[in-house]
Length: 103
Image 1 (tube, rainbow, N blue to C red):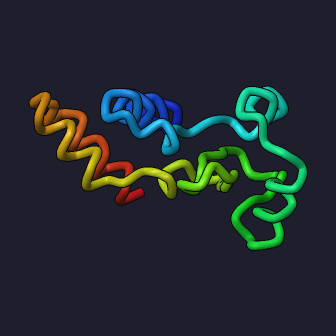
Image 2: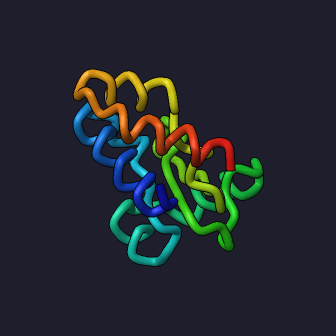
C-alpha cells in the first residue's frame, strides 16, 4: 500500500465515521484557503512545534489548529482504522497496513 492509498483509505474512514478533523490534506496554499487558517493559528502551532511549513501533510489537532508531518501514518489511528475495516470484512487491506507499518 502506498502512502497515497493509505491517505485515501484513512480519509474514507474519517468521512464515514464523521471525524472531519482527522482528514489528511496536502500542506499547501489551497488547503490553507479551504480550511481558513489564520496567521495567528499557524504561528502558534509552529511555535508549539505542531506545524512546519515544509512538511508534506496537514491535519487538525482537535481544536481546529493545523498540525503537520512528512509521514502521513502519524495521523492515522491504526486501531480505529482496522476496526472499521473489519466491519467491512476487508482483511486484505488490513494485511497491507501491517506490511506498511513494518516498513
